[in-house]
Length: 369
Image (cartoon, rainbow, N blue to C red; front, side, top):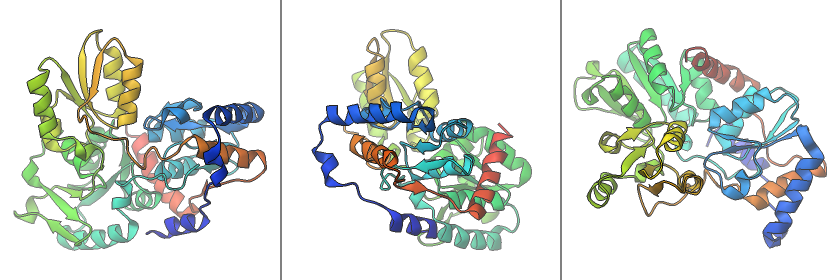
């Protein structure tokens, strides 16, 4: 566990049991009252993967970086109650001004992928990779990573990427160095590099547990080093899921997120970011059929919003991400009632030294896409 996480863990507050005994109507009424009372001083960004009970009160919905940027642009808001996960709230804190306070209603809201790369592992990996490859590597990190990992990347000349701009950022990185270390999601890194024409046999995997490079060929041939991390939701979409759709509904289009495995992406009709998936479904003709490989809350919302199209989850047994949508209505109300009484619950603060280097990584991305 990183120092920042330990400090946050020690400050974590647990929601009183009384909130679990309130009715939905009571909670919704109180949230509306508090939102009206605070007006423009309160801003609630809600990630696409959040529960409907929370999204209904969001002032803006979107992906992680989009929400952090929206929070940064809202200079009136004193309190930003971020309905997402820890790394998203960290980014919002780093991009907003000093007088704005970012709050995460439930400190258990996290991302298993982001947790697969901590700074101690990364420092060890970097030292060993420098010994193997010399000064030939530029690090890139998916925005689904901790502030400390973003800072590491920024300090070493690299940048962050999103699933929308990963291809452009890999092209940018290859203009700087001959090799790339891609953290923490191996699947997004592999799919993006493959789309750029890089053969799979020129990609190696870095195993942070064994602190070893996993590669059977000549290491001089390696040009992409993929951190051995993944999204536990997207990795559950399988080739068998696709084969089932092809056999039972051959006229159904399959669209997946690039956090899915290479095999799944290759067999799908379309692959792209959350925004790409939403835009594709919205633009699709009435009566078309779609199997979607991404988080279940978003799939369910697309089903509800597009009744004139047949939409299913690519994996019919998929559950919503247990950590990505941890925030619920009781935690949201608890946080807001805390603000009403003058108490800030679960504030997210990133140290200045980490913020400085992490923002460098974010700025390099934003100026090159």
